[in-house]
Length: 140
Length: 113
Image (tube, rainbow over all chains, first blue to last red; front, side, top):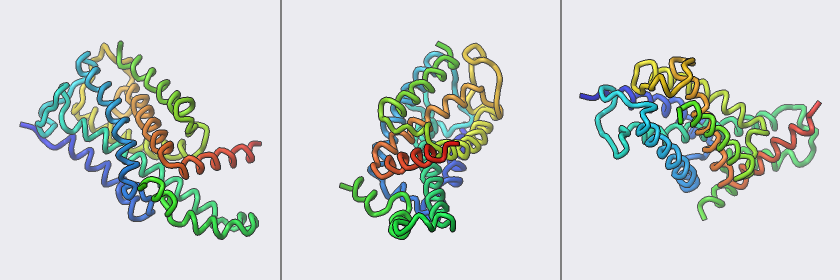
């Protein structure tokens, strides 16, 4: 009989990171296609390692702490979700840092003397990492 | 091959992807390292629960032995490789993000003391 321990850890990761999307408007989920194109190859590569490591006996999973859905290769469903959740959280964190750095850099008074470029630059970046240009790039 | 060797190779592969393959060069800028510091904190929390409670168990023969937050040190390398590869691919797929990285590094170059 399995439990939700592993699933709860993944849920905790999402809770810690997902708020960045609406609050800092990082636009990661909005760029779903770019996100999918990022997650697919990375997850595939690391899952291949994972399956090989399980086959080699480097590590294994406690059947009592996963919900009990096992996939080919000896991986619990949670392990596949891990390679989607962790990269997503990493991207959200990365974009949040970029967003905060860009905003603080532009609102610091000392940078006002960077001249006329500061105003358009601010408007451009205030929309977050996404911004109209970013969205278009990915959507089309 | 032990987990130790595989984790070391994964870090080298991730660096190769970032510096040579995709030429995103995130490890040369500050945004990546600031992000990684934050991600590492949460990684240690998550790993601590997964390894500490034994959700994932490791063959003692496949690892060096030292543990950080209950998880084998190799997990740090594993996590680093995962995060760097992810962010390199993500950055490569968004041209404006890539340019922001260029700006990031350019600023750093000018600030060099």
